[in-house]
Image 1 (spheres, rainbow, N blue to C red):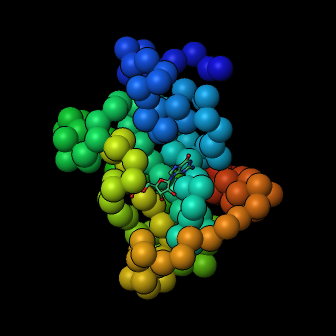
Image 2 (cartoon, rainbow, N blue to C red):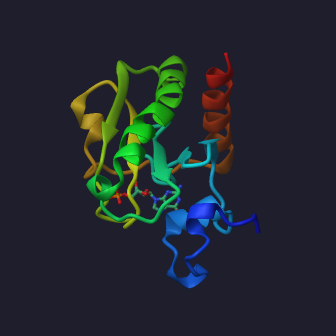
Length: 146
Ligand code: 5GP
């Protein structure tokens, strides 16, 4: 298990959200990018290929309960990821969504979109293989490095 992140150190494992366990490394994820405050990874039930989640390394349930510097920092952290996604996927742009009805740990959905329907969370989710997830992850990371 990886060393706990500073923001998670006071939370016991049992009480952690599933996203804190992903940050900590006790639940695996297809990681895209990480810094001291944020972590980005592929959504396991994507609406479209390249659906990314960005989460803060703090356990706050509701997005707008985040501290101001986390709120603004989350968009700045997301920017190179979104730019890379636009290069990799056949999309008009990257759409943003905040839902939070399933996981009580604030997060931002970054989704390559061609129509508003690509942001419809009532749609059937994609089932991708490990190889497909790894390829998508690797392509986004490679596009960020260019
Ligand atoms: P929301 O809380 O915004 O309604 O949805 C939570 C999102 O987190 C969903 O799109 C769901 O597929 C994703 N999710 C839930 N559990 C996991 C997980 O263990 N790993 C990953 N990568 N994504 C997850």
